[in-house]
Length: 141
View 1 (cartoon, rainbow, N blue to C red):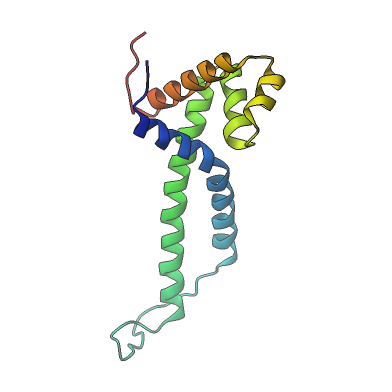
View 2 (spheres, rainbow, N blue to C red):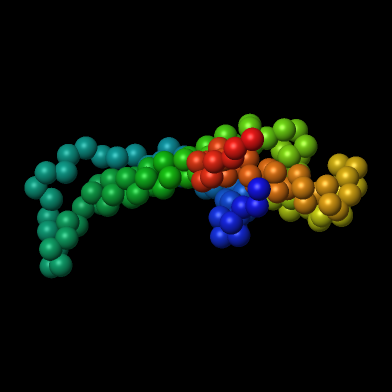
C-alpha cells in the first residue's frame, strides 16, 4: 500500500525531528529543575501597560509554557517510540540509521547487507507501520 505523499513527508519529518525533540525535553527538564518559584502573588503592582510587573508571575507563566511544550513533545516522542516498537528489527535498524543517524543509503545497504530495492521496500513498510500505529491510516492485511 502506498502512503499519500503529504502524509509520508509528515512521518519522515517526525522521524528526523525525534532526536531534537528528546534533546529539547531534557533541556526543558533542566530549565524546570533550575527555576524556583517564590510564594505569594497577591496585590502585585501593575505597570503603565496594565500588565503585572511581578517576576514571580512571569516565572509562573514561563514554567507553564515550558510544561505545555514538554507535554506536546512527550506526545510526539511517544508516537515515534510506539511505532518503533511495532516495527521488526530490520525496519527499526533502517529507521535508526536513515533518520536518526542520517547515514547514506549505500552505507545502510552495506551495513544491513541489502540491495537498493530492499532498502526502499523496508523503508516503505516502516513508514506504513508508523502511519498505522499513529492512527493516520488503517492497514488491512
